[in-house]
Structures are given as structure tokens and as C-alpha cells.
Image (cartoon, rainbow, N blue to C red; front, side, top):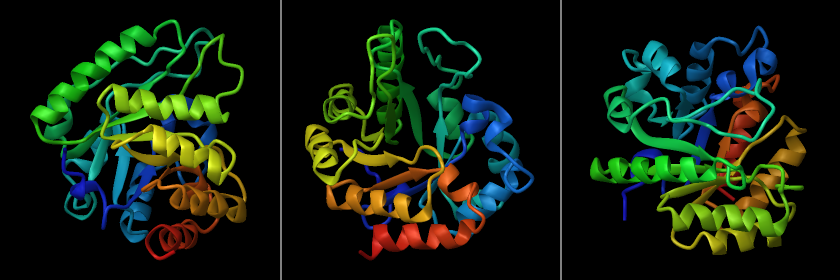
Length: 251
């Protein structure tokens, strides 16, 4: 088993995700959160267990900064834009070796299971897992079922399938969407077996709604969350970070 201790605290995870700039474009940003340095500050002050960046942000804002000593990096190895409206394919844009040189303690990769291009992404992720494990760092799978045959990607069956895909392909952690209830998410965690599960934070919702979901994720056996917009789009990001941390590490 790969050691997850560098990106967890007492076996639990609280990741600040900031790969949305590539995936969604500037629409998620405003004057308070367009600057990656401000996100690094939130990650450190909010006591997150790791921060998630694409390679360009990591190279320019993390690799040679004081933050490298203060918070671990999870480097996202693949990505796509929202500009293409066809079947989803997220090609690898960074190698594991590059990620390690930038200071990464773990790597992540998005799998669009159900896309006509899933076989290409599965092949790429297989290589990522081999290289990551050779270097003794975790490989995290963002598993998002998507494609013309996927009607609803948050049902009990689809989210549990996503979790199982992560296990079957050798991921150390599965980042998956919420499937609507504690019971549904518990089934996904069970289907993930020895692969740990974190919640994909998703679109901004009310604090109360998001904290309720986090409570259910933890009760279902998840180890934590990878949250972005529900923190750095919040009017009080450090306060919501404190509340999320309380749910994960105290309750």
C-alpha cells in the first residue's frame, strides 16, 4: 500500500482544489480569487492537508515559494477546456517525473468513464499509476462518468461504479461526486474497497448544504473532501474552511 500520510492528517483529507481555471475558464473567478497566490494563502491559513494545481500554476506559484514547506501539492496531470462540446477527453499534459520536480507529494488524473475516449484515458492512467507507485507517491483518480449514454452522473449506481473504477485501475484515492444521501455514498465507499474516497466539492451551494454533505461523506466512510468553489468563492473562505475542518477532524 502507498503511504498517504504526506497528504492526509490522521488518515483524513482536506484538499483545496484550484484546477478550475483550465477546466472552466475565468467564469469561476472574481477579484478575490483569480490570483493563485490568494488561494495558496487560504490553503495554508485554512490548514488544508494539500492543494491541487495544474502544472503551470505549480511552476509559477508553488515550486519556488515558501508554501512548498507549508502545504503539500497534488499535481493534476491531465486537463481539458469546456470549449469542446463533444465526447469528453482529458489528455495528459504533465509527467509524474515533472510533478515530483515541482514538489508534488501526489498526482491526480481525471477519468471520464463512459466517454468514447475512456480507453485512451484508462491507458494513460495505468501509466500514471505505475510511475507514481515506482516513485512511492499516491495516484488519485477523479472519476466522472460522462458521455452520450450517461443521463445522470450522480445516481447510486453511477457513483458507485465510478468508485469501483478507481479501485480496479489501481488508484490510491477516488475523487467522486456525491450520490444524494448518506446511504448511497456509503455504497460507493464500499465499492471502492481499499481505495480511499474523497468528495468532489462541485458547484457553490449554501454553507449549510455543503457542510451537511461533508458530514454524510464522513459518516459513510469517506476520508474527506477535495473542495474548491465552496471555499474560495465563499465571502469568508477561512471561516468555511474552519467549519469544514471541524466536521472532518472533530465530528
